Image (cartoon, rainbow, N blue to C red; front, top):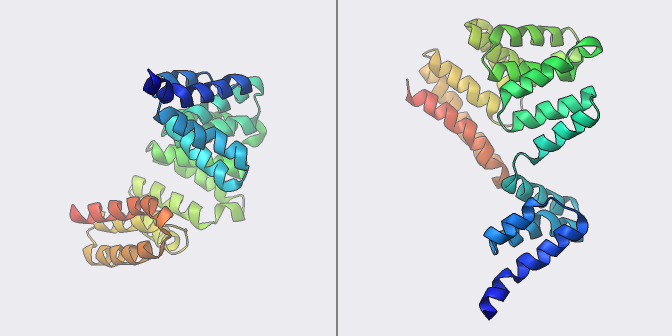
Length: 246
């Protein structure tokens, strides 16, 4: 009996904090079914940021909250949009949907955001183009990117060049894709642009060039800070797998 009380004591204390501060009630259910791990998550997600109030602590809390409830930000964004239907809130919904991989939902929100006076807004055009690329709607994505290019400097960044490269590749406009990939690969931070370019070269049968590109990715990967390597390794692996298939 004593051990049972000790097991549930952290859940009881955390549960009192939930009720007193008016936080989401799903925590109480988690404390019941996971009396050990749920209070630990609550400590890092809620209590530690409250006690420390620093940027690092808030970052840890955000990661923990996302692990427990990955759709929380999406729900909050939808609620805010329902309360105040502004373009800014609609863009937040689109970003949250994209973070969950819900590209169809994100595209629908971007399309609505692009209506009226926001039709030429660079952030809206870029967001809509990215969602269309993920859905494989290459023609529509290219049309958005060409609109963005007309806005001046916002449409001439390396990140936009990478988006153009993906659209050109999807449409089979390979020379234009190669030019855009080459421009972006050396200028976009991280390994995404380089990884996509290596995969493109492998698909085009340019094995020697692709192998050189993969070696460069390996070199750059070793220079990336350890906490950032898992994400970077995704693009290195994508390039390596594309080369292995050829």
